Image 1 (tube, rainbow, N blue to C red):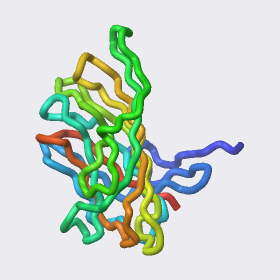
Image 2 (tube, rainbow, N blue to C red):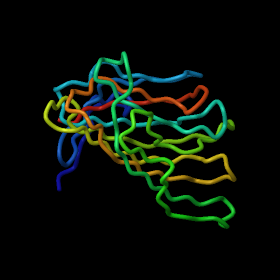
Image 3 (cartoon, rainbow, N blue to C red):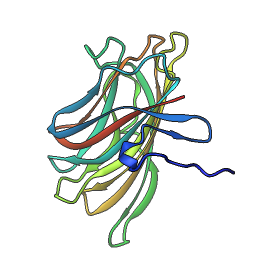
Image 4 (cartoon, one colour):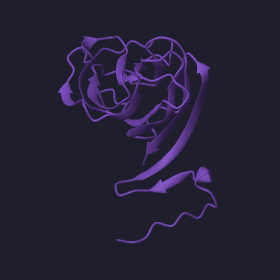
Length: 199
């Protein structure tokens, strides 16, 4: 296996990275500062068959809110794509007295146009936040449904827990997805979301 060399002086200046199956190309990043939502309404097109979103220090302004997303087929005029999803999580509290790995039927969707939860009960105290990633596959296809996979972790305010959440599913549409929105279940949030395409 050959070594990967970064020619940029700083990692923040890197515009693409070589990976095993393709090159990760930065398209854009957006930062929320007490914002209601972050929407990506440009850059999702047929250039890439795979898009990756990275969530960095997602901080709820109202403690215990869920982090959600939805997709659009009309460039962000409406975020209401019909979705069928699956959702499970693992959690562990700081005292080591409560642990679980479970499926959450209340967080999955069955042919729903509602927003999908991808991070549960994000803490709102000064040092509490969440992070993770989501992959959206071939959003510009006009033949197939639109699959996604999300893997996140957050400081859950309900008893000082770490919550790792796994969500997957598909947007049940053959129309091209060309916009995506992230928001809390209620209230505003802080944090950065970076969008990359995979060549």
